[in-house]
Length: 451
Image: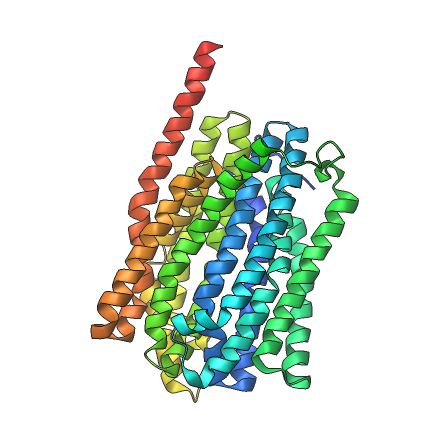
């Protein structure tokens, strides 16, 4: 089901688009939470540390995949908003070919580099084997991750955020059953948790593919569209690669932070892992609202409706910042209770570490509203290259805190690295988003004047 976002009230359109996407994001994060909860409760805190010890590099690789697929959706959304359906189908076919090539390169290279990655992250020897098995399986499943994210991005580009959510719901239920089967019955340990996650992602991707092929004929490329076109591929790469790099550059700072935290011992690795899982889950609404605003901007840019773009960004900011304030309070006051999803109450030191991490980031959680909306709006307007620098700001801020302060302040410095990165990125991306909107408005005015 497609949805045209160039007509109607922006606030309602953004919410209607964001709600199923939000639930889908929550379900996708449920993969990680279920893995961590079952691993921590059944296999113990060291196994939980093994699953979380490489989370930053997962964010680097998976973030590049997700960012690239999201970027590929921007030209598709713009063509759909402009009513240029043949151009849209050209973009879809070329995006599929580029994604297939990306899957081959990333899967092979990450599989071979897995031991080196664990060494760079200074993973403790006591959890090295479990961390390696878990990470290797995740890397081997990258083609399935790319399949789902590309197809869901295509569906969202034409206004359908409900269908990807429905398929994720199915795969999440499957993931719960597979987690228990692989870990409890087959006793495959941490590798079993990764196998369950990858299998569930494969199912959601295949379901998206069948749905598009059978039900959404407007998205099916014809024989005329099934050819690589240099200009089309170039436009896709100009949007997808910068967005992928933005995620990856941000993840480099997270890797530096995680490496510093891994050096503090398995207790802090476990506490950080539990807190990070909760943080990622609570961050899902920001991603949903940001994606909704990005698609809104892309479609209205194609339709030449600049005032609607301004209004959509403003209303997206109100929603996101308000949510950030509420969620921050929850993490401040309920962080320890939430952490007990992953470890028992007897693991006092781990719970203390997790609660401290959540409490510290809760005070600045509202800043993610500004960061995500302005960054996704900038990308949706076609300035993904400029948005990359917000990721650079995050990388430098996290790295400075991790390399310069952890040696003196220990885990406390880790607890303040994220907030420093968010505020630093906001200082760049908020005024940049405003400048991009002004530039587009000026270009549209000049076009109208010459007509």
